Amino acid sequence: MTFASGSFTPILTNSLIASRLWTPNWRNGVFCPFNMVHTFASTRSRLLKNKIHYKRLALSSCSRSFSCQSTALSDINSTSHTVSSNGHLRYGRLMPCPLQNGPPRVEHLVVTKEGPVVEYICKALDLPPLYVEDLIQFGAVYYALVCPKPPPTASPEQIKVYEEVTDPSILRKRTSIKGKTVREAQKTFKITRADEIVEAGTYLRVHVHPKRFPRCYDIDWKSRIIAVTDDYVVLDKPAGTSVGGTTDNIEESCATFTTRALGFSAPLLTTHQIDNCTEGCVVLARSKEYCSVFHGKIREKKVKKLYLALAAAPVPIGILTHYMRPINMAPRLISEDFVKGWLLCQLEVLECKKVPFPRSEIQRTYNLEDCGWALKDFAYECQINLLTGRTHQIRAQLAACSAPVVGDSMYMPAAIAEIVCPGSNPFGKNKKLYTNENDKSLAIDEWIAQHGKEPSVAVGLQACQISWDDGKHCYGARLPWWR
Image (cartoon, rainbow, N blue to C red):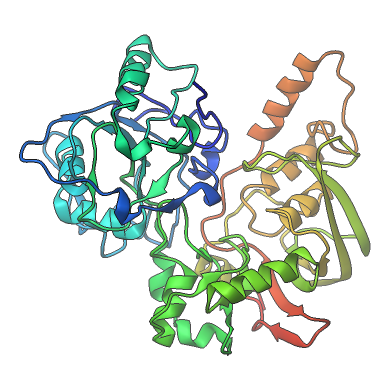
């Protein structure tokens, strides 16, 4: 029997809130690739039985949570949940949106007798029904027909439970997985309706505290719309928002709020991404057909993107070339030299001009973080033609040039560390020679530790223009926030 180890690999733990996630991309709070997430098909629903019994396979695990801060914030909005006398959170509803993300909590469960998914989660996790229904609406509840294989760090007891629910004699009795390999049955699907029924042996993953985006509720979304056509909408995305949502929150996204602002009945679809902390032009498709068309234009390199970056130091004019480690985890590590298997990163700096550093009141408005950069009289506004579109590419490349993006709390601390102590970056210009792989591995871990957390709202980066079909379609954003 072959078990999937890459498509879905959660930790199984007996503690209420574990200290970390073992999954490779734990920094983003993502357990599986986006393309592995599918809709919970109604054809998989099971009939309700009178009595429901549940087995709790595992309690919670944590993913790193990136704070969505505003000035003068409380930890958690009391209308969402309060703290009871015994110190445990007492849950209410997900709305209104708290101003700051709560402590991360992801629960992993297995059902032993089929029944309504909401009723099961409520009983297993001691959550109110309306809160669980909100989680489902947010896209924060997932399932797999067969429990995924636990990690190497799992306890003997956890291994035993896993072996019980995945025993071949048990799986053969389940009609829902007939004709499927175990690997296929371990793929994750999103539950989209509160009245779904889950059968015995079903694995559930519940993101009890979804990543929230309070800035969505402060934006005049109609004023951010650049263009509306029969095929697409061009949006000037605000910083501090997600284009298409996150693994545990598809509700508080640019696509959702723009759909509502325009009064569309069909949801807008994401065609490409920019970082949450970046503002500027994004294209949202009005149909699956045009979404596919635009994806094709990106693959064929018919889409051109120009950025404005506010760097803390001057950046040389011309093409910058680096190589990015092919691991889907922040921070993104890049090398000055070619590394086999690493991804080519290229951008062209078209212009770099000296400008005043953002005023204190503007920094406060956009929650710009003080990352320890000493020189704050001037900054350098760079116009950049993005030649390859890697995640965090501009931020990582400018930081590698000792010119990090202003307010970038993830990459600026590492850039400062390399300036203060040359050779800290094992892939930089001043990299050291290591006598063995163990020493180099330790140096890489230390270098990763020099990076900070994801910015809370904004950094000095704007997708200022997007065009395709040789400029036939060309759209620009408003002035960047720092002007």
